[in-house]
Amino acid sequence: MRGLTFEQGITLITPPSSCKAIENALSRNPDLTSLPHPRPDVIAPEGLSQTTGTAEILRLSEVQRAINGHFLILPCDLLSELAGESLLEAWMVHAAGIVGSSTLSGGLGVWFPTRGEHAVKGEETNFLVTAQAAQATVPPASNSLRPSLSQVVYSSTTDTLNDLTESKHSFPIRHGLLRKHGRIRMLTTSRDAHIYLFPYWILDFLNQNPTFDSISEDIVGWWAKATWQDGLVPKLGLDHILNPPHPMDGVEHAENGNNNDLNMEIEDEIDLASMSSTHVSNLLTPPTTPSSSSEPHKIASALQKVPPFLAYVHASTSPLIRRIDNPSLLLHASLHIASLDPSSSPLSHAHKVHPSADIAARTTIGQDVLVGANTNVQQHVTIKSSVVGANCKIGAGSRLIRCVLMDEVEVGEKAVLTGVVVGARARIGKECKLGEGCEVQPGFMVEDGTEGKGEKFMVFEGLDEEGELGDDNDDVTEMEAEGGGGEENE
Image (cartoon, rainbow, N blue to C red):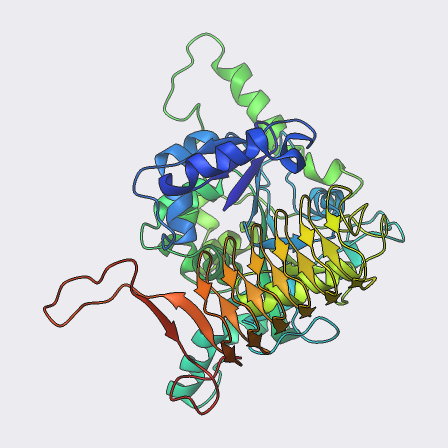
């Protein structure tokens, strides 16, 4: 996960096991060293692993020390052509609190469609319920994201939705939601991009709720429900955040007491938020005396003060927004990037074939192919709709169609690969024929003449007959082809 604070720049958060590799890449990889400033800082908190919950990451002391204001979270598997400035503009107009007012800043998240041109079978989806968001008085620009914003009122994973509907044989909707929002929209085919614009106070909200494990389900989900569900504000500790004790409470002012009281009354009467040209509704309720306040009024007042969490639901396939967290998505996204014309997108490459690549005569390389630096392609090779990484070697007579090869892959002579993802430093033997759905683990060696479709080639370190761990050299091919006794790889 990567957090970007508006004041401090960019911070990369990684498990300690990956820290050295990331720091080396930032200092040596030309694509990273050429990035504009500020240079990212890398922190590797002790105890952080690949399975640590996203909310748990934000709770780590090292991470909280790195955040000094409102911040943006991006996942490490994000692929996006969306301009970050457009998100910031939408958040600043609709959700950012006014400096000097009592209104707390809201949040903003991004969801994208999983259907359409870039659909991949089996991609994860989320369940999102939205309501109409308050509109600013200033009309948006023609290319603004503001007309597409809505308020999140419920958010969960599709698995959680399925469990709920299975146990209750329906999806229950609370009356409090319908009282607050008479019209809602339910989305089941969108996916959370894990792009979040968070206000600084969210750290207090997180610390008030030590059981929160996930940003998407816990932080966003409970925050969204707290805007309409009675009783959640005190249960979640939001009342302490929404109504913090005044710094002057309990302090006696002997000399200037009357003047201070007068100044505070004037500040209470001036609503700085309403003076903004982009302000729509006053989130503050009229002041009431303790004697006239009833419990229902207090609850309604608290609900009215909870700032909204907004959603930008990307409705089209352009610009592209995708999470790349499995080989099928990696293959699809890589082939899309290979098909882009130079300078047509932030993701496109200036050179389809790197100038340092060694391409032999009598080879066929399609227009939608990317070939990395120092890669050697021998004679009579055909490459179509594929991405070949740096320092690879493609043997004579081989054919690559709709494949992705990571760096330093070697493909033997007359091998035929179709729809295959090959990890870094892997070796494909001579005359191998690997079909759609095959995946080769980094560093794995596929023997000469191997044939397969829908298989995963990987190193398995299991227990031998005596219960001891097997040697690293015991290579086992896990076959998951259709009809092969394993699960079907989609």
